[in-house]
Image: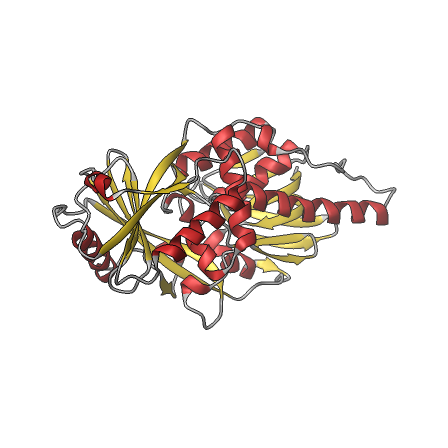
Length: 395
């Protein structure tokens, strides 16, 4: 017999995992489908930061920053063993893009948006303490600020959320390849392949959380659901086995004034990221030599003594709205495409996965309630009217 679910979620990254967890927590039957491994794509190739996005204040994305800072506080509470606060050095140079007073205003706003009891504020590092800067290039250095954000293991965080979804009743299908989905009277017939064995599932709602593959998955659905025109933007990181510092650095690249992070990572150092438009199959994304050279030039200019060679380089893909703006100036707000018994998730940040899941679940439950009201005699799963808050669920 064909197994039936309230929800089939396609994509085992942080957004799909979060939606599956939220739905299962609220009593819906859920199948989470992932073709290779949990967080195999973008969700394991981030900068490993749980943060509000200080740089997004430059583009006035205040709502996004406020939401992310709220989520940062929640994740520090529910996943405190893998989400850890750290101090970030933010050097300001005389020939840089921003003046010290502008950076100070940004940090004040960042603190106000965070609210009370949400990590420490900021302070200016006295010149007498510049010896703490791990050999940072101080030529033309005007001042240095310190503020707090948090770091995590993005892959482990995703796996924790997946496991929480399982504990609350979700069915995990991994490695399982999504093949097709076809509309039917009760929702969708979903065809998947596990070890070359073809299986059909039935679901009332289909959620496409495939990240960079979102529109490729949409192409396999009959009839084709609504889509959003997006660009894929590649971000490359490089890793060093040598540790530069226990703390983090938020730097302005000397080449183009982009924001770049230098971070402690697994006993070594992580540096990233780039922003380059990508046109191709997401399965084939990889760092270019130009990107690696760009990042090496930054670290060697900022830390002249740190002349080590990277041991690894990898790239992930962001999903951003398609327009003529530079990648940096495009909105990072999550977008949804809705169709009959269908919901697709476009974009989203690691830090805000819970907020994205809650927004998605509200849309799903609203459509289910409308369906129940239109067909009161039909066999429907119970639909909760009050969403259970996952901020109380430790992961």
